[in-house]
Image 1 (cartoon, rainbow over the protein chains, first blue to last red):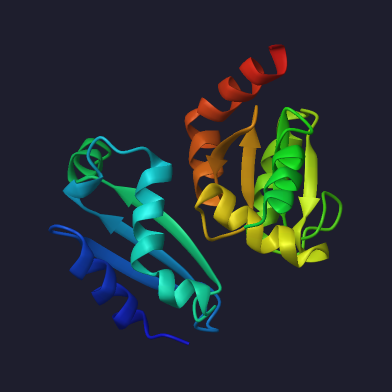
Image 2: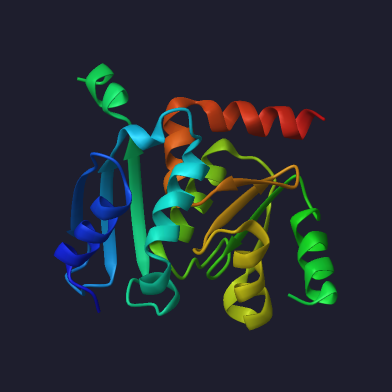
Length: 83
Length: 107
């Protein structure tokens, strides 16, 4: 099990100007949802964006400390456009 | 990954135009994320095959290496890795998935 704050901090440390929100989907602490906004995603496909996050959390995922991770990845521009 | 396992996975990926590696099967998905992908494909009424990774530990680990993607489910269209549950849902919402599937099924 891994704390939500720790997951948030790990993602934030790896990306430029990242805004990260991490939620626990089930209350069990291992089914998480992360919403990540960073300019690093510019020009990248969803697959590449998710791979970036997975790579950052590789340790937690492979040890199944995080069993499931739902991801939403956006650039600041995309967020602005959807508002 | 052994060449044998690589070959087995390649054969599974290419067994159908649309293939889902998932936990459980179409009728009884064993995970909510796998269920998302099944429900999306069912809503289109398209033919697709599934591979239950819970039945085979080699495939369960191997498919993650094959696609460089650490989670299940994994959706493949025309042998190409499209994404996991979140991406399938995004592409469903944008209409991109329907387009991809139609192109694949027409080819």
